[in-house]
Image (cartoon, rainbow, N blue to C red; front, side):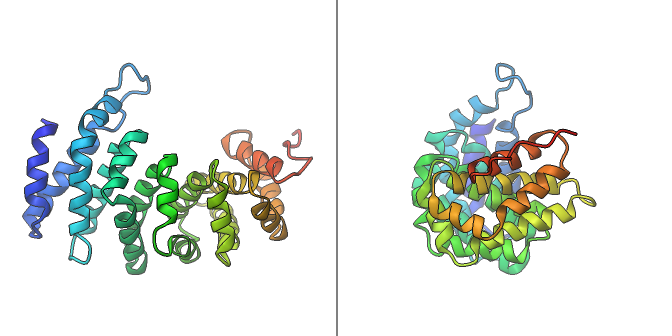
Length: 283
């Protein structure tokens, strides 16, 4: 059934009518559903196997279709469906490379930037989530940093949407993946004036939002992990983060959070910034 969706996807991907968009979104939703884990136990879920069997054929079509939507009036729901399908099918290093080889990094980044300017938050989240997935692959990180104005675009989105935790979670998560085992990415983030300050402001804003929006905790965790990954292998990033008093923000998060993933992320970031008293205080 899924393989039958690919010819349909090819045929409707070039059209722009409302009916064609509905068909395109339906094909993307089918591919996403088949590659979204429906069972927590790996042997029982067929999502990964489906992604491996479908990805090499579907990803080039999806990326090409998304490219054709650049500058063309398209409903946000259709763009979200395309971005989400790309994310779901990029399930391992090989498939991330397939998407990147067909230009997914630049295409997704341009859709992210266009959506940011237009205030289309759902498209921003979906495009950034797909970029975040691709940049979990080491092979894609350098290629992503080579895109035009990539760090300024991410910093600008953080500054503009720092009170939107669903967006900042994805942008900070993308930075987390970029900086993991990648000092060159950390240097690029440091080199963009105001970028690390934007990270800390987004983290602080999410902490303030947490009382009214529990989803902000996920953005906070990604911010802590981004700081940790930037600072652990890059002295320039560590020095800049300490100069911006990142440790104070991290101490506040650590001490105001219950034991769990968020507190652990704040403590780990403090440790890798060189703080000796990084462990949570006994309660």
